[in-house]
Image (cartoon, rainbow, N blue to C red; front, side, top):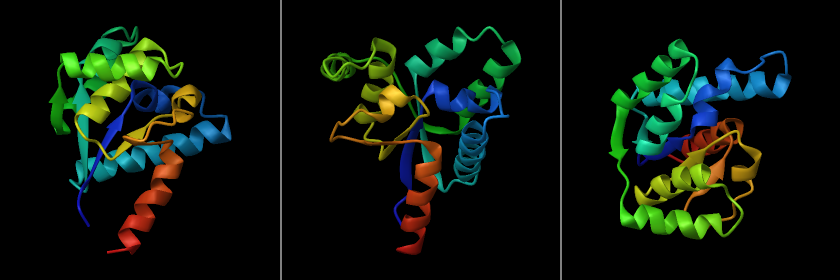
Length: 150
């Protein structure tokens, strides 16, 4: 199986810090942590971006921000802003996606990620053809199918 390239947005990285008393949040957290274990084991390739840096720098909880920032060191690619990314972002915004979220998607598309993993409902409804957008729980199902197809 070709190693899949993934992009986790800031909402996804922050999921373990949300109220875990809600079952959906707890399950998404467990799935997200499993995805990170696959990244750490070099079974998935992580893409990082300047917009992740930007959003994480606005995190008022320094410990959370530092925990998230550590994942940048495991990224196989760190995407910087380019005119092409801005152009892709502008097109995505025409679908109703907010600017920061469109920049995350644009970075993932630009870097040719296979999957964009998020817990943000608005982004999950994005219907673009250039990338598969899914939540962490759905990605685990995809991962299991890919693994079984080997």
